[in-house]
Image 1 (cartoon, helix red, strand yellow):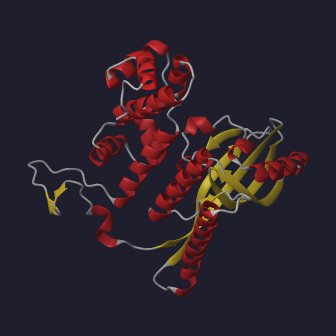
Image 2: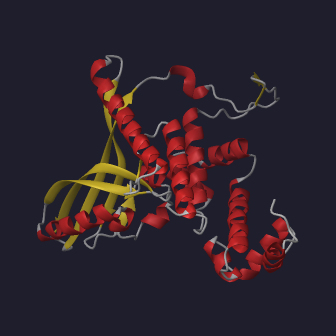
Image 3: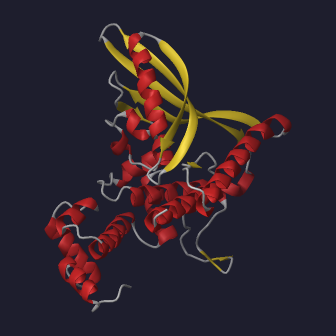
Length: 323
């Protein structure tokens, strides 16, 4: 396996570990035919995630203090050509994609290669019948190249008035409902050595759920640097929170505003591409989300003190040290 491929696999493993640490056990690593330590680790992690996910489900049948709850994890509304017309907020968060990058996209583009073939074959049956229900085992692919294997409940409708077909794809998640009491309301980030920092004005208290949503927002930004970021109100709604909590919580967690973080990460990625690739500066600017080369060049110089061209030349000659 090439060093670049190994690095990418390790990044995927790291991301999956972070997801598991935050309580998400539905992600899986795509397996390959390689026979090395990295592949062995990926297989073990997949098995562990599957076992934990199953244990949560069966716990509901033996623990009388909990109830089994079925929630729609992902939901997609497709037109007669298989193009996504609507998607729920949870699907965007799970796939780590912005809503406008999913809508108007062929549904098959969200699937791995095996699932694409399965979907293509089943689509022929969906189109032949006016009403059709089926269950498909499909695997979705996130921006981090993690896979999400799930049973999808597919329903096809036909509107006789408009003569148009609509397809609804739902992924159901089984979870255990528990009461966490006061826990959701006690997490205050303003603390020093475990003691609350005294303030004249009370600060907004962020729940664990608020923090999870803000972290999802950060991941979405990092995985969609080339995309136009929705306005903060729309982004907050996509994450299932409000604009004030997003702005306040992001600054508390990461010490920077959402928009400044976006520019900072775009420039960080651009600097790596300037140093290690031969791509044109105009192409690099476009790939990290800048609308024009002058804007990219100005922002790069403002951040790193030199233009992209000067930075590349000096890095090649060894006159600059990466920091």
